[in-house]
Amino acid sequence: MDTDSHDAANDAPVDRKVIQDLRDEGENLLSELVEMFICEVPGQLAMLEAALAKRDAGVTRLTAHTLKGTGGNFGASRMLALASAIEEKGRNGSLDGACAILVLLRAECVRVREALEAAR
Amino acid sequence: MTVSALIIDDSPFARKIIRHHLVKLGFRVVGEAETAAQGLKLFRELKPKLVTLDVMMPEREHISSLAAFRTMRSEAPETAVVVVSAVPFEKTRETFLNEGATAYVIKPFSQFSFEPVRQKLQRIFPASLAPPPILTH
Image (cartoon, each protein chain N blue to C red):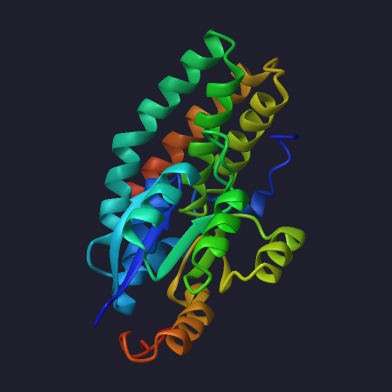
């Protein structure tokens, strides 16, 4: 998966329309989801790092899948794509290069978090 | 009388969003599961009238989403099953709809993406659900 070919026009960390739709639902839904992101993503990234250190393809696949889904709920397309790339490596049982993608994913999760905190 | 619903999705974010939309429609969420195996167990215990099922959950305890769906359809065909997916694979969509899924919804949810589902559910449970929302653009 080419993680570098990212459309500049689509470089926003989250999808503004998705965020607005969540905000429009009211009842603190967006705020609570952002809080969940802040609480849960660091642990998931740590779990992914540990899985890669142990070369555990199974846990790598599952944890990356979780992060992919988390990004998807906010229209965080680059976060989703990076997590998906790691998930695929876990599924294939070939983890070479996954650590380098994790570095990019960590940075992207920071961008997503900042965008979500600004949006809530 | 409110209609009972069970949510099966490995993402806590998705479960929260789906719960929000179902409650807004007038459903009573009686359970949540994060794997197909857990979902099947709760399905048998709680006997919900509606199930939402994520098709892209990693297989755990040797039960896939498709296997759980087929078992639910076999054991309680009157239960409405709304299938949820982050990716619009046409073949997957066709499989589930041909085998009796009530609807196939693509994430992320919004009141607009959920509107066609709401209309179908309103036809299935006409006396039980909240009136249609006013969709704002």
